[in-house]
Image (cartoon, rainbow, N blue to C red; front, side, top):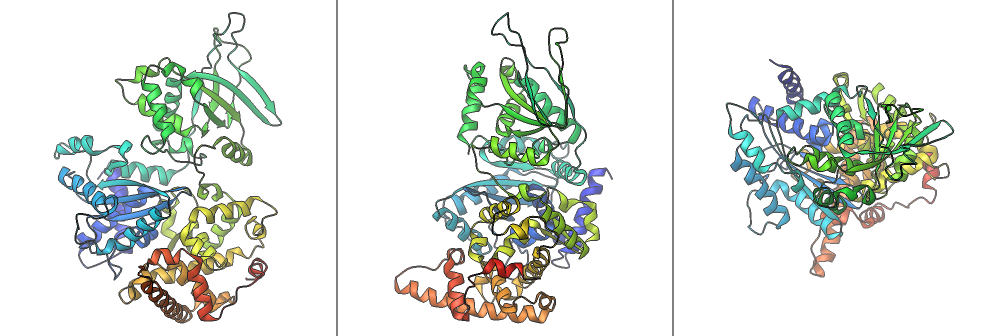
Length: 594
């Protein structure tokens, strides 16, 4: 057994035992592969992939008979738009072109074309279809990204058609990816080790060609403890830096670790498309005039005093590209095409390099230089003090509190009985203690932005909670939120067959449980209390929802579960039915809950 099999089989054994669906070992193994492949792709804990992404029937089981050929769907709220990640996973060594093509067409038929072909056997997809419609009606763009993940390998002598099928269908520019077991192993290796191997690289700033009297290559200065250098290099040299990163760390993700965006590709982002066209066309030599360049923060930079053999060498240690991810990836994609790599020979890139280990400065540079596309906040709060303290509190309770990329795959997870993503805890805190279940359901991006602001702005109303003060009541509140969330998820399969709204009302159910049990946080440790609160909440929501449905029917309108639970009306109706009067001093009240 090679190391790849050792690692992957170890994870599959662990996941199979955790999410056992039947006495059929093969079916459990196939589900484990789905969970592992999807978790590797979107970097989510196994529990959350099973709870929120895997397509299951109303009993909470993975049946596969009514999933329309789709194994998992995840909507990623990026503020101004959504990414919809759609997965099919096959625990088989062969990559069959008919299955890949069918998956692609199934997604198109069901979502893009609104199931105009009247495709059958999609009952388990209804909640996801409704979410897709609801987001579309809100006016936000949805980029549908498809992933076909299988347990074989692309270059397989036994299954020679794998490589051909891969070459035909794998097309990131059209948002379609095919991943094999080698890719899974590389992702697992990256997640498990996480620590970046030391990267040492030497830039070769190019001398000015403006005047024979002025051949300088560098523009340098310092402010306080930070030194800066500005210069231009060949595009090939930037690509060589990325190559070295991949060689040393098996991925280029860590080179962009501080970047607050992801690569947006050529299809979605017009600037990338134009950049790609320029680099491939006759105007490629004008690239440095048309592009803002790259911003790099490095731990160490050696600025030469004089040219060496007429040229400057500028060594750096552990450089991070904090602005210019899109530019770097477009250039690197061309670099990988050997037939046209020579197009980059006469292309130059402007660089700004800052030597600093000051995390706050790096964050400020990252924020200030990234202005072209929406900012996400999950990574930006991962290093905040409140999250570090929350992690300690959760870990002491044998719960792994995941704040950063890849933590869910760490070997340390074996010492924990459960996992939870910090984003999920924050979202459901917002729905319960902060009493905005509709906002938590409607926009996780908005929630995370507010928490980020609270952790950085002294005058923010929630500053005391999220400033990182060890005396903040937020940590026990987070633990309580986890207990509510876990109860809601574990009981979904019990109540969903009796009541369809359970599939859509996680946030509202959590809010109702919190309002029922109140501020005595010790009461949430008793399962009978949670059960009574859940059933009372479900009864009230059902009552208010039926009343609203009748009102709509009188106007010949149709009820949308998703639409209802994303509006303040769901909370207002619930409070009126329960006789709850909203507090005018909510934040002050929250500060006292311990």
